[in-house]
Image 1: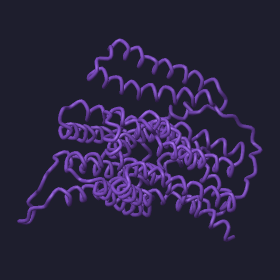
Image 2: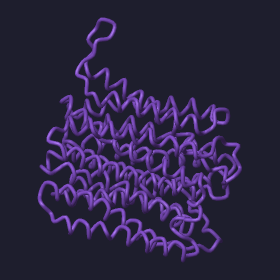
Image 3: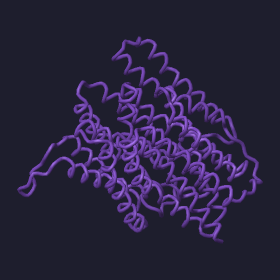
Image 4: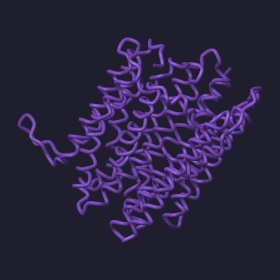
Length: 461
């Protein structure tokens, strides 16, 4: 019995560890950009390439853990993450670093479905409770990552945030060998749509590369015709992808599911959630460094209130979700995040309040707390929306949710870096970026209203 709880601890540690690595990279992003003396758009791949790989590989590793063996798949993912972290740490140029970050995304993306599957096997009668506890490590990672990453970057340089992953990754693999037991292979015959996954991954990368080329067209004179032809590959691959998904018995994405209005609305919102909440807001450390001349340690510390706010908002809404339903928490949370971005867009240096002058740091910390509360309010509802409509396809719904959020995050980072590099003043670029994000969040409200109203909804119409 003790082995089960120790196994749960090592699984939780693996998710907290890889999650903290992602947030620490966002904090180190300005230092990495400066070190390689590259443009924001190219450097943005350090952040955006990772979620694309995670999005596509997450359902693949989920099926692999069912078909092959969960313990082996978990260790494989951790091995990929650890080796790619080593290559990140020794990267001689930005290209090697970006490629290494892609493989980091492959490893970390595969861990969530593997760990969820292992916990389902280990705690069959308490599955929901322990899976809920597992997801609670994300906010903890969001507190640890920025602060430790900021301190490491400030004290030992940006490479240290990747070096630290190597011994931790090895320790997790050693303990997993001891604590995890091999799972039984599924008796259900299944297949993996590798072609569909490859088409999705290729079209996503081409789209992101197209954004990069658009910036180069503006600044370096790459022919517009070339950009048009290159981006023209995206709809071609999309058509081939849809043909493939209709053709195979077990498609990478269930397109029939997306035809249903609630599911389509939920995943459009998931994309917007990733675009703003995971994409634009990942550049807050750059905002703090560029606008307020904070050092790396300070830029990481300002993310802590956001994580605390997420925990508080999530706990309150989770306890009342059956009474409050889905739509209103999502709307209130979305507008709260939009309000924080609206205030931050003003880039206030100091503000008079009750006869006292308040500097920018308390204001930013407050807005990060507000943003986190908003994020926490809408997360439980958006996570659970639509699950009751098709409870027999929970894994598919969760996989779609994660994929759309990760793709939204990648595209959000890519578009954000283009906007910031387009303007001569990065201050003005951030103003446009944040106000634009507010507009998108407001426009998402009709989409939220198309999602299920409460956990009691049983219709897919």
